[in-house]
Length: 290
Ligand code: ATP
Image 1 (spheres, rainbow, N blue to C red):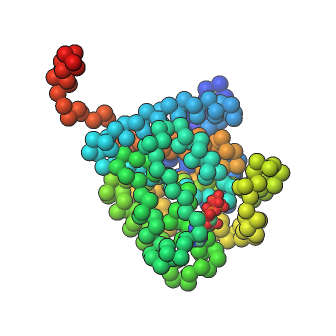
Image 2: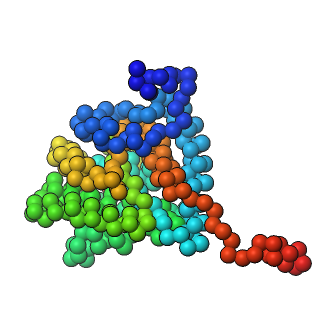
Image 3: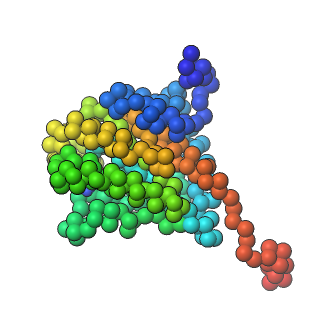
C-alpha cells in the first residue's frame, strides 16, 4: 500500500514535501498527470484551509529571513518560476508571495529581451535582479527562457543554447555558494487547461488585458516546448539547485505546493532571531527614565 493511501481521507496530510515534486520522483513530463495533487489527497477547500495555515508559517519564516538580512546575515532565497503561458506564474506571485510582508519580497519578470539586453550575455539582465540579503526574490520566467523559447524558435544557433545548460549550472552554483537558496519550480499544465484559460481571457472583459493573440500561435509549438522543458530538467537539475515539477491544472494545488517548497527552503536555512547589538537592560532602564 502506498504512503499516500495509508493516510486515508480522514487524516489529511498537513504538508507537501519538496522531495515529492522532484523530477526523479514524478518521472518524465509526458508521464505526469497535470491534474494530479502529489502529496495531498484533500479537496480544494481542504487545500484553501491548509494554504491559509501554511501561509502563516511562510510569513513567520520570511520575517526571520528579513530580520537576519537587516542584521548582517547575507543569505537570501530565489524562487524561479517557469511554465507555459497561462500556467499560473503571476497567480503564484500574487497569492503565495502576497501572504508575506511585501518589503521582504523582490519580484522580476523576464519578457523578450530589449536591444540593450541582447548586446550582453544572457545572464546579464538576470544578475541585475538577484535578491538582496534577507529577501525572497521571485523570478516570473528567468534565465531558463534562454534554453526554452530560444531553443524552440532557433533564436540563436544550437551550439550557443547547448552551452547555456553548463553556464546556468555554474551560475547557480556561484549563487548558492554566495548564500542564495535557489528554489526552481516548473508549473506543468496540459494544452487543454491552457485552451480553457485562454478562452476565459476572451470571454471576460476583465480578462481581455491578459490576452495576447501570439499565445494562440505559440500553441503550435507545444511539443517543442515540452521537449525543451524536459531537456532543461535533465541538464540543470543539480544537487545545489534542484528542480521541482508542480502539476498546475489545479491552480489551488500549485499555489499550495509552491508555498511548501519555499517553506522547506526557509526551514533548511535554520533561521533564528538576530541578537541585539545593544544592551537590552540598559535600554529598558533608559526608556523607563525617559
Ligand atoms: P506572460 O506570458 O509571462 O504572462 P506576457 O504575455 O505579458 O507575460 P511578457 O512578460 O512581456 O509577456 O513576455 C513574455 C514573453 O517573453 C514570453 O513569450 C517569453 O517566451 C518571451 N521571452 C522571455 N525571455 C526571452 C528570451 N530570453 N528570448 C526571447 N523571448 C523571451
